[in-house]
Length: 198
Image (cartoon, rainbow, N blue to C red; front, side, top):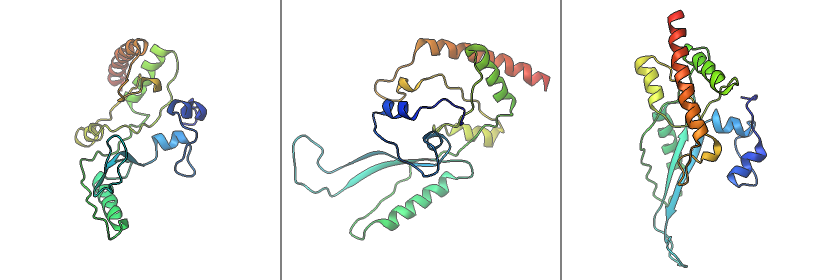
């Protein structure tokens, strides 16, 4: 991870922020990829229309998600969060925590045939050796494949930070789109060859 190209200045510029804050003892790239998180995805309550109102809200809401890491259970973390949040609420406030769904953490080993085939495919199509990273994306099916089928998933990303994934102005450049197709074709070729040889 330390070998991955990363500029804190560019990171802050991309997000239009002046500073970063997070868990002490870890770099920003570590915090965004390998550490557990608690994220407030949305907050609303009270009067939110145009103009001023002096109405005090009777209810407020928040949507919260958490990134899990190995050896954490979504059911256990949900229960811990629920109990803690309820315990810190003032007696004058009623708290109702509604769990939605959970996904278990998963890490693909870098010594697997699939990973090695992906490395060779990336090298062939991009001309550079990829650096393995962990990503904080929520893809619960990956852990399920491992648990039920005993299979490690190979996730290859071809997007760029400026693609603004999942935002209203999401985009995806044609160069990376076609390079992705090329890389996946090589991956299947190398995976098949390496599987036969093992």
